[in-house]
Image (cartoon, rainbow, N blue to C red; front, top):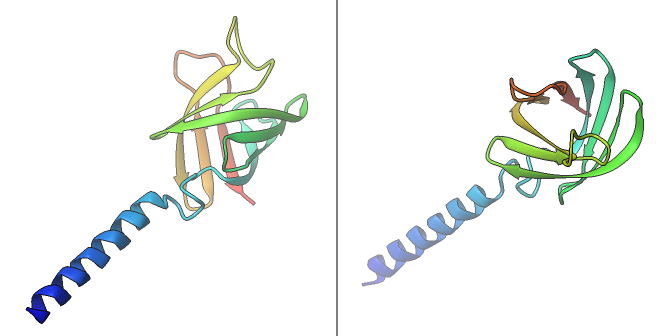
Amino acid sequence: MKKTIALLLVLTLGLSMLLLTGCGGSGSGGDALKGTWTGKDSNDFDNTFVFDGKGGLKFTGGFENKTPGTYTISGDQVDITIPGWGFGDSDVRQYTFVIEGSNLTLTAPADQYYVSFDLTKK
């Protein structure tokens, strides 16, 4: 009986650890983009994104200086909203993102006009 209880306790603790690790994402509260990223866009302008880990960001680049905005992550997609960035009625730009080590690539959809970004985490 004691062995069964001990085994159940170990399995329960192991499952709990696995679930908590899965929720932790990249170790930054589950937000893989959290932090400061700098680099070039596809027009060769310098850019900086500061993602706060809570859906807020500051963008500096091109002709803009510390413009506030927001972002939401869904899988490997990030929607970035910065006033004045959009076309028509929307200021939202959607990107596919890939993080490899300390490098972040934000790729615009092929059917969109806006730039993509190659960034490095500071």
